[in-house]
Image (cartoon, rainbow over all chains, first blue to last red; front, side, top):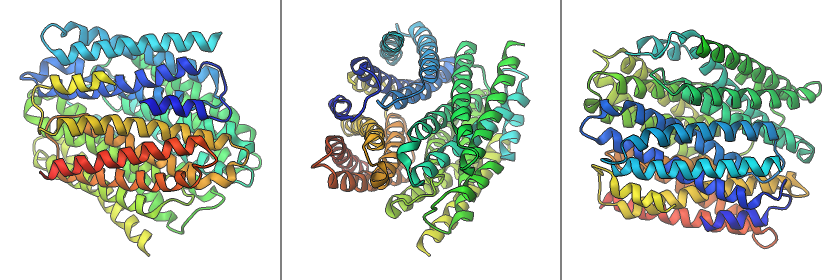
Length: 135
Length: 135
Length: 135
Length: 135
């Protein structure tokens, strides 16, 4: 994802100097979106997917919410601060809920362990971005 | 979009009895997502798109946030309430901000007038769904 | 979805006179995307989701492909014809594969019956749009 | 994006042994989707965005098509081969068209240069994945 950092550096008129936090969040949210997609698919392929319905749905919801976060943050130009903050808040909720649920299965399903990790990293990147927006 | 209502009626285990509010929100958010996509495209095609940057970006942000809302709400099975509420909150912020900005151009650009209307309808459907979640 | 038709009518510089086919396709693809999302969720909630893995995955794939189709077609300005044609072709493949699989379960699961119907309607709207692009 | 590779390694039942090509494509398509989003935003912020309408639209189309590709390929379980091939074909068309257009501006706009690069890398990853599917 090196090119994403280079893209941020070439933007003619970035709205803020939170470029570092923004790049970290785009990367973390894109990674989390895809680990969630793969985790939902892996859960579906386990022997008893009926027992994993909650995990599958949280992964699916977290995936689309993270993808929206990375899309919004990948636009360095001026954006509405209330919208960004509310999106980041939704992303934190989704990542935390998914990390909690995947964390429950982390002992016996490696995909849930890695996915929970990605969710926590994304939630932290969201927190840092939210802090940079306020500053 | 009649089939979406029929889909809701055929789900084996809906998590709530907010089916009516959910169907209304899926329809309103899907409509709003697409009016925002078309409005951004129309703004880009106006004689002076540089004057419409803010409107284009808000339409783009609102489009992806509304699409995420309609995706989440189109899953009638059990979901995390905090995640749903945070997503609906983000959607209300995006729809209001976009309705305000498009509303400023409504007099001289019909696409902004119709788009602002769709944003307001979606924000109201979000409010009703949020109310149904709390009930 | 009335406002989508009105949006098309207000665009300052539509690239083609295929507005009617485009509006029909945006509506059909948006409907199909959401029936597929709901169908995958309903399949997951059936007593034996392990038996429905293929159906769930096809619904998920068809949902994202249809959402991309409706997004592209909702931009009436000039677009690359090869890209549009290839996207419409992918959408036809996804809708047909999903209609076939859902069609197999249509007798005993109403959500699959309605979803198969939405997929066929979208595939037909794609065919008509492809025809209009060539003309 | 290391965790995406780890997710692939933990899937209980991958449908193919094209894991390496799949991981490369998920990463390239996710990167390309985001460089395209940033490039469209950067073009919009240039002094004369009206001169860049074609580039903006191609970047937007390429972004959503690449996001759909990375979503589909991030599901290692069994999928319909015709659908995957058609989606990869659409992605190649979008990446090539966007690389050509961005390539035209590469001399004087760095964001277009980097974006064209990401598009070419993604098109190549698509070609390799298509080859692995046939094998």
